[in-house]
Length: 183
Image (cartoon, rainbow, N blue to C red; front, side, top):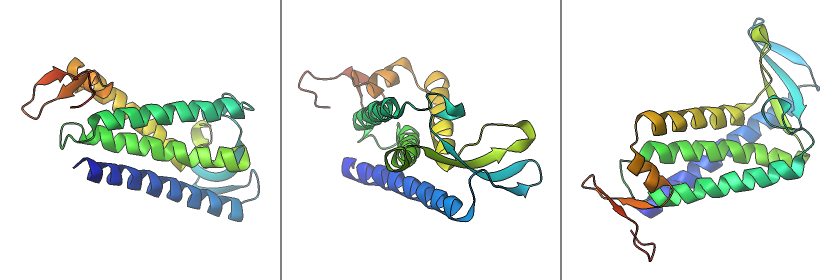
């Protein structure tokens, strides 16, 4: 069971990161820097820009910091995933969202390592929303859904499972994690 969940997790991560890189490759090959092509009038425009920061250009020029931040976030994702791997249904949606989050983070990480910036290309021009990319969609949506689930769906004990303090039993109860770390 756990092995299958790990395989599915890493498959989702790899597919999302590969798709992100493919789209970015196509943008770079078919657009000049800052060139715009309308998709839906003035609403949605494709344009190729180079983002040296995170969302809205925050931390621009702080490549080392962003690489360390991504490594820390990836480690946290793997830690939480490990704590909930093995549970069939209870934490399925969180496992999927963690895979989407990590796939998006990996897509942008590849750009940062390879290019020292992230290729962005989706521009909602009508409201002048900052340009973003496919990976950003997965990171943002995953975080929003994870926070929503943790606040409104899961109980405090479920959060304890996520951080590794408790174990969820299939009968719907929780127990403290054994000192040897086994479930």
